[in-house]
Amino acid sequence: RTGVTEIPVVVHIVSSTPEGNISDAQVKSQIDVLNQDYRAANTDLGKVPAVWATLTSDTRIQFALATTDPHGAPTSGITRTATTTGSFGTNDDVKSATAGGADAWPADKYLNIWVCQLGGGLLGYAQFPGGPADTDGVVILHSAFGTLGTAAAPFNLGRTTTHEVGHWLNLLHIWGDRLDCTGNDDVADTPSAQRPNYGKPQFPHVSCGNGPNGDMFVNYMDYVDDDTMVMFTQGQAARMAAALDGPRSSIGR
Ligand code: ARG
Ligand code: ZN
Ligand code: CA
Image 1: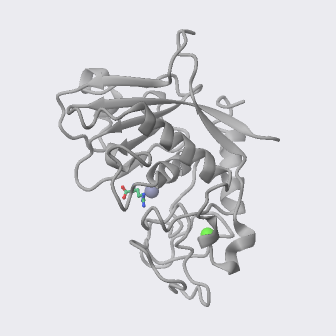
Image 2 (image 1 turned 120 degrees about the horizontal axis):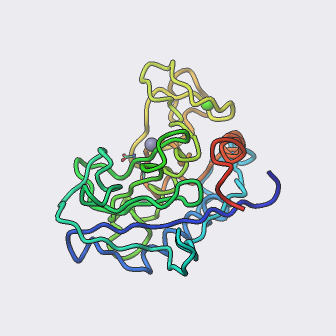
């Protein structure tokens, strides 16, 4: 893969309240964030501690709302569905019209993003490459989506979607989802870390013998606040490129 890959996106807004029926402008603010973050064009990239500055990466992946629907008709790339479901979970009901959600568009041609109310403090979740097509994509809490409208601090900079799309492109959490220093994200240039970081940590946060620089909590694949996660590494970009060359090769041009 050379040059820049552009991924067509459909955003399915599934809402049971007027508030949850977010505006087109809020959707567009999220697409803008994805394009800044994945191209290392985010204005807060300077928050990366100097020791990791050379690891920051332009992934050469960008995103655009779809202009053609699955039938070949013009589209805004946004669908709107009214539901009686007040709050969704991780059971994928939001991805099914018969379960109160909206059906996926073909996953080999579109990145499906569902935006809805989620329960249990969940900001979002994702399906990794290789799963069933009808549930492929990411699901995001409406108040953690984009940078305006219902987006609410500290998750109002669009980074939940940056993080979940990272999973969709096969990235793992940088602590490897174990809490005993044996976890691994299969990326060499992200330091091993014991556990997720939350909030706004101070540099350095040392764990798992990873001193002096410690955990790379400024990485999009940690759990810190939106204003604290600002980078992907070269190794993460390579892993995403491998997904686009492999299980996701049918998407993007
Ligand atoms: N799946 C994670 C959660 O729901 C997403 C975390 C995203 N973090 C963020 N600062 N936006 O907790
Ligand atoms: Zn995650
Ligand atoms: Ca690593």
